[in-house]
Length: 290
Ligand code: NAP
Image (cartoon, rainbow, N blue to C red; front, side, top):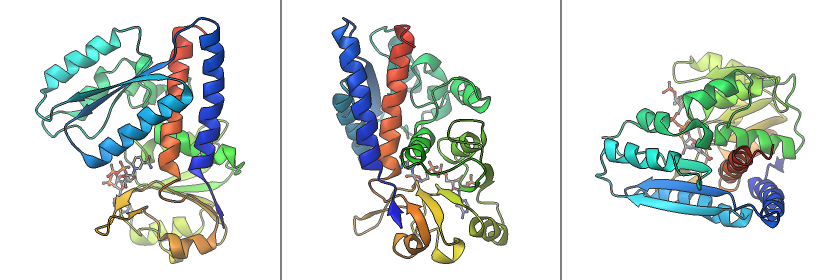
């Protein structure tokens, strides 16, 4: 078993980005700029936002963290997004999810200018990506593809099983792996909560690559996988003990894997790296550098 190390891969990608930024700034351009909106107090979100801002510094980007109280109204938030959309000094905008319950997350996602939507959640980017067009690709799914590419894991022609169909992970990674992309051209089965257990087992037991994003610790067990499987564990679950674990029973499943992502230090790091790639792309679009 070998580790698909998200830390090493992310650092390499961010280092490449920072070299490009040095060149752009040296030619007289401003730095790329990411703005992150954080609402209320939510410990996991605090930690995700912190790592995004830290990664901006490593990439040579400017960043701004805008904090709003839990009781901000949807219309106030939409007005803020609208003003950032109109600000030429911001290339990429993230509204950290989840938003408080009184705010409809889809209204927020839809309000972000698709040209600044570095999370890749806006229907315009999701639609373009699905059609195989140039787009900001959803960051976690894009990060997984970059990780597979970095470790030269063959994907074309492989049988991939995705467990979980969320709009931010399961659905986009199933589309991306099956599309005619550089990292793609796999045959993909997307499973979800309504997938009968026997069917899920049939699929996972013959999968070459499994991507799991269900948010249930230990969901994937040793008996569910074949020898040599490539296992991508997207889950981030905090146990009562405080320990962070994924959706895979790492200790036992890893013995059968050819490659596996650790948690932490796997997909999470790659999500942030993909945001940096998307921000650089937004910036290069703005300055017609592509
Ligand atoms: P989500 O929105 O809660 O979606 C979970 C998905 O799992 C749903 O599609 C659900 O099916 C499916 N599911 C639940 N129980 C299942 C079962 N027994 N069998 C098959 N499918 C089942 O979660 P998410 O946002 O995708 O996140 C999943 C996990 O990944 C969480 O631990 C989250 O913290 C983590 N995450 C990590 C990153 C990262 O950067 N590493 C990024 C995003 C999320 P239904 O649709 O039918 O309900």
